[in-house]
Image (cartoon, rainbow, N blue to C red; front, side, top):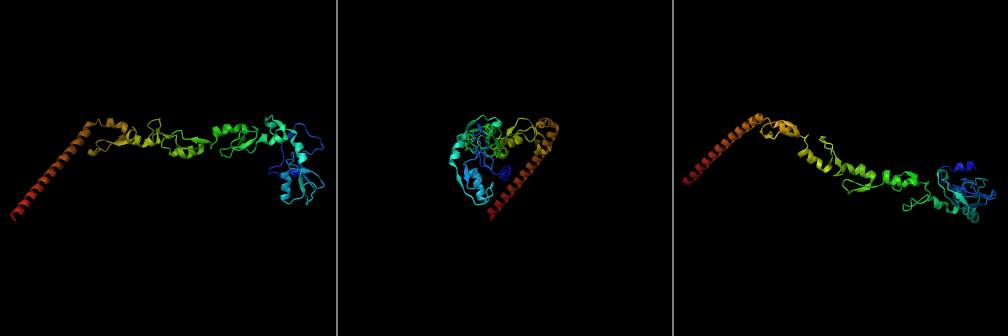
Length: 285
């Protein structure tokens, strides 16, 4: 029997993986020879062995064109045994997760409803709390039903999530934190100059660095006058107290401007005279 069960290892077993509360009489077959579980939709085979198999188990044998696993007869048929099925479904069984702590006991006919192994999204939390089910958020992880809610709400990377900074972008936790945060205009970031610990909204950082940050290097206000000093903004007031240097630069610039102004006035005067001369010549003609 064990060898037969081993031959289908890795495939879905066709029977019920639970135990009877009170084992039926020995004359009642309670084990499928293939999966070694309580037969589901038991089928009576036409072979001399006369055994009953799970419908799924014996159909798999037939579809693979294999002989009877007990008597090795290749040409056999099978028929669903409704009488045996009714009897088995009326017997009380323990949940297969009894060892994990499930206290359910009930009729075998109610066992699959209790397990709810392939739930829809709507009734995912209904059924045996010790059955492992796949997270409905699509992360691919499996958990006992009793633990799935805390996973989905607290740690699942695919749980529904919206950006708490802009309050506009909605997706799942993984997408928001990995893809949206790096470009969210309201995501808190620190000044690149590290001028303080308090963060700024990403959209305001450039203006802060340009117009406010005390650690941004700026030109001296008298740069136009020739002062080439660049200092952090916070140090510029002290630099501006050097009045002698700055007055000297201003005086030089002023002299240069006066000279340029005088030259400009002279040029204007020369042009004016030339214009008058030209007009006089035109009148004499």
